[in-house]
Length: 193
Image: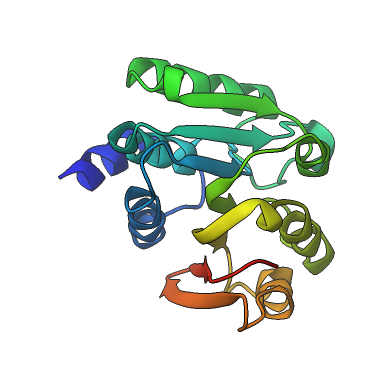
C-alpha cells in the first residue's frame, strides 16, 4: 500500500524512472534500519527522491537528494531546465509533507562526497552514465555504505558505462548482486571495501 502511495506521488514528475525500477528502489529502502540514511545521486526532478522519502518516513530516516542542477551538464533530453526541476522537486516534497525528511543539496557529486562523513544505508546512483563518471561516483560514495547496505544503479542495461563500471567495482568478496528490475540493479554490501 505504501509503495502505491509513493509511486502515485512521484509519477507526475518528469524523468526516466518507471514502476519496475521504482518498486525495486523502494523495497531496498523500505528494509533499511531505523533512522536510515538514504542518498539519491542525480535527483533531477525528484522521481526517485520522492519515492525514497516515503520509505524514509516509515523508517524515521532521512534522504539527501544531490544534484548539480547545472545547465552545463544537464541531460539534453530533459523536459525541464535545471532550475525548474529543482523547484518541482521542492514543491512536490512540500505538497506531500516530505520536505523535513529530505536535504536538497545542489552540488556536483564529487564535491558533496569530499565532505561526507556519515554511514549510508542505501545509495541510489543515477548521474552521468559514462563509465568514468559512474566509477568516480562509486569510488567516492560506496565506501560510506554500511555492511548490509545497498547500492542501486539506474540505467544499468542501456549500453552506456553503468554496467561496465558496476562489473569492475562490485567485487564478489565485498558485494552481492541483488538482481535487476528493468534498467535498475542493486548490490548488497557484504563486508568492508
